[in-house]
Length: 430
Image (cartoon, rainbow, N blue to C red; front, side, top):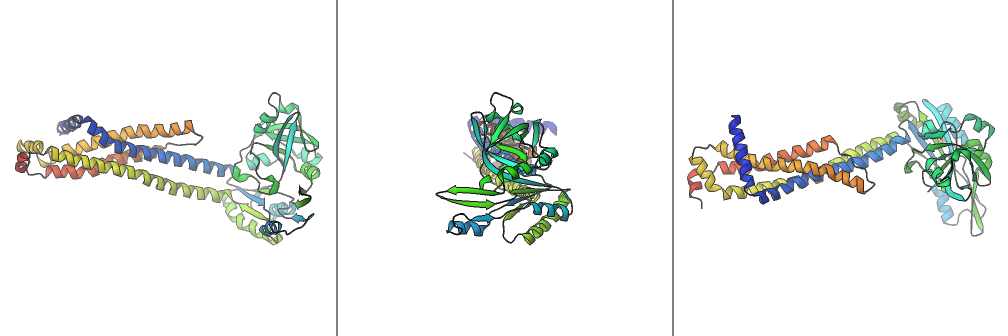
């Protein structure tokens, strides 16, 4: 039995090699189909991975609260509302942070943050930055990684020490040829001694949206004690333009609430919203729950993969139709050969097996080549662009499995059509 099957395989391969160009062109549909399935799923997987990692770095146990200028105030200002010298008060307060810590069950830490846009200088080097007034727990809550030196400590907050921690990107721009930990930087009219360098793990979605804190590069952060930020910059931010000025009083631009686990996050979200609305007459805050964003991203990923896989599978379908078309033409071309084989004693299943082997060889051969091209294509995309691609084992197995199934499904009809030919009519075929 095994020898009969191997003989059939050899005969099928020999028949394909008699028409090398036609066989190669027939395989192209399967090659491009398998390649497109693997490549498109790899690109989709990479995009989804980056989105999910960005959300994970926000902290699945964290809840982010941000101050937002009320929509009514924005419309009034745009329509000539508050006049010159007016002052708008909105956003999160220190009392909000204290209430969250004492009222909401499951809260581990409450991290207040003030974010001011300023220029930072060292000698002749100057760069725009976000001056973030915060507490020593920032690294634990926000996930920033300490590279050198130390982060802010409790004594810095109590003594209002003029110390700062800067991000590695900002350090490279300000100190291209010297050690940042040996120098001080100037912000506004004050000097701050650099005590540490951090690698910021934040993503654009984390950037504060409150007025002047928006639009700075993520690696341009300077961290100072919260008490120093309050005393040096105050809580009233003034913008001057065309002889007028606008004053905004914002105590905290962002508050991060770290919960003990993900189940506490789900129950705390509505509780925090209810608590803040009780003490805020206007919608001057927003709540972001990374855990919910992560679940939405995972759901989007599944839908995205299904859509991309379906689109790419169409290429395999077209390749399968191409195989069936060529094999039907081959059956017509080899009708007399089929009649001779039947006359010499070949059974219908032998004819079916011969033509089915040829289609399977075409599809599997094209599938193997398509797998190689499909794996190399995402790697080339990653090298030539900044786009991240991830080739998964399951996508390769699915693409290759579908290519084999296509060969069997679309080759079965031509094979059975060949087997059903009448031997006498086949021998008379010219």
